[in-house]
Length: 112
Image (cartoon, rainbow, N blue to C red; front, side, top):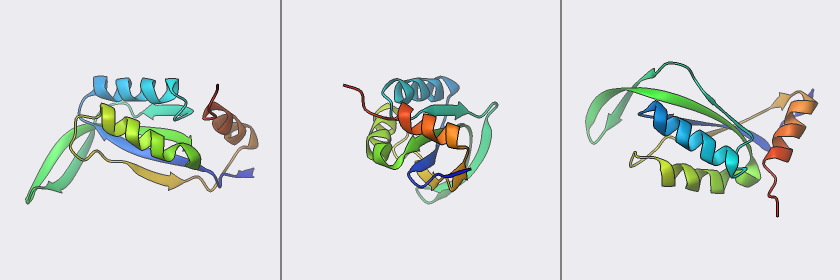
């Protein structure tokens, strides 16, 4: 088991599965995330927006990335996302398998 100190899981929700897939592919291709899970089936979200309580069916993305890549990842999500204020929440990975966390870090390295 290895400390995940410089790794993060980022949560993003999307209104359409096609949008979720497009964002997932782009951030992995650009090495902004090592892997993105799209949770099967929509999740139901209840939220307050512009003074009203709303409800929506959304697709949840779980992106695995590094602290170093967070700013660029957030910028890319905002560029591709149709929401005015997309969810972008980064949670620390406290620990994980040495092999997985090493792979994650390598996949998010910038290549020249």
